[in-house]
Amino acid sequence: MKDSTLILFTLILLMVQQSIFGQELSGKVTPYVAIQDAAVAIKNVTIIDGTGGAVKYNQDLLFLENKITAIGNHGAIAIPENAKIIDGTGKTVIPGLIMLHEHLFYGKPYDGHYQGRHMTNTFPQMYLAGGVTTMRTAGSLEANTDLNIKNLIEQGNMVGPTIDVSTPHVERLGFIPQLQSLYGDESIENWLNYWFDKGITSVKVYNNITKEDLSEIIKISHKRNVKVTGHLCSITYREAAEMGIDNLEHSFMASTDFVADKPENKCVYGEPSLDALDDNDPKLIALMQFLIDKDVTLTYTPTVFEPFTNREVILGGGSTALAPYLLEQMQTMYNQQINTKRDSLSLIGFKKEMKRVLKFHTMGGKITVGTDPTGSGKTIAGYANQRLIELLMETGFSIEETIKLASLNGAAYLGIETKTGTVEVGKEADLVLLNGDLSNDVSKIRNMELVFKNGVGFDSKKIFDAVKGKVGLY
Ligand SMILES: [Zn+2]
Image (cartoon, rainbow, N blue to C red; front, side):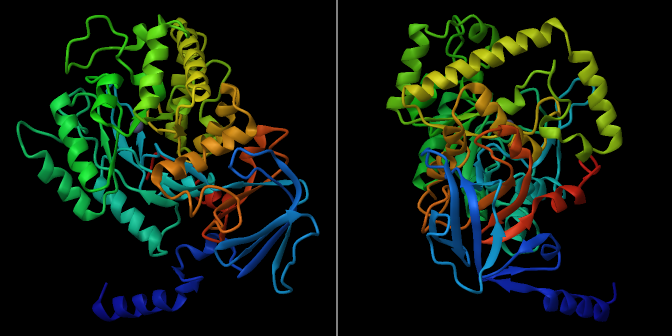
């Protein structure tokens, strides 16, 4: 492009930049905005507010710019004359989802080897379309790209949620070539500070780090007020909790605490020990209590462990989002996996984990949720966030608790619970409006119409339509 053309092009872009409640939105974002009125009232709607409190029916909800200012029984609150009125009859409002294991890459195994591919141009907007208004990446293959995506979204140049960007997986040599980030005795402090200085706001550690590494990582991160989470293997949950880790990924599925004679600092295959573990084993209950005493949060990610048989090829009805070549590969893999011994065993493990998570919750343990779009490739942004809500109900949570796990709990972990995470007066207008009564049928979570982020209403279907057939290409 010639300089003069570039300047003209930039000028035109600047001219179409719109300011909504102090947020600048460019022409790349505005086509997906359906509501941008300064006063919005949703009338006669069902609200599941994310506090865990009972579902409220026939409610009116008002927000001015980006703040919720009134909620009450239908007809009981004052609505300004200029307000945009949305008829909520037969519809449900929930808080914008806050999920904590939302990578911007996708698992695309090659010839039996794990690899991830960055989904720069599809996943950010798909997360928002799937109701996610705030997310943590929980590990990164391209941390610079993730940071740039976060910044582009904040500047109004890209559609997507508010992002807590995590470090690249802090990892020593393992089986996934894309993941190693620490070498020999290089300075962990320099490495972490490099990322913190760039704007990284959370740390993710992985399978093969040592106890010495983790203890240093936690110390340095906490000094900078950054929390540490881990998908562990070489280190047991008890060891990590003792060192002061904040969060453990995949609930109990990555625990090697029950492997007999586990060698110190070595990653070992833990699944058989978990499969053999009784739900009420005193060692398990003692570990749960220890995690609670040490204030460790577990991130539950059933979406990445969902078995195949009698379930969907792509979770949450996301098949149409895949590029045709990829859908064909996934269908072939699905056909090979269903009705196998391996899949029936995975169902047993999946159900056992549901019981463990419920038990931990009942004991007072802190749980957040996330999708983790890796694994076999069935889990993709947006669609899997909706599927996760259904899986929380399958786990045994009530609809009120399900929504709280997927909103307020994430907000509380991230320390933003006074600003967002529930549908309450004074909170930011981060909300989802969906068609149907979610309290009566959880599959209505798939009927999202509007996702409000900071008071700006995005058209969920329009965003999903724009990326149809593209996942796997970009
Ligand atoms: Zn992950």
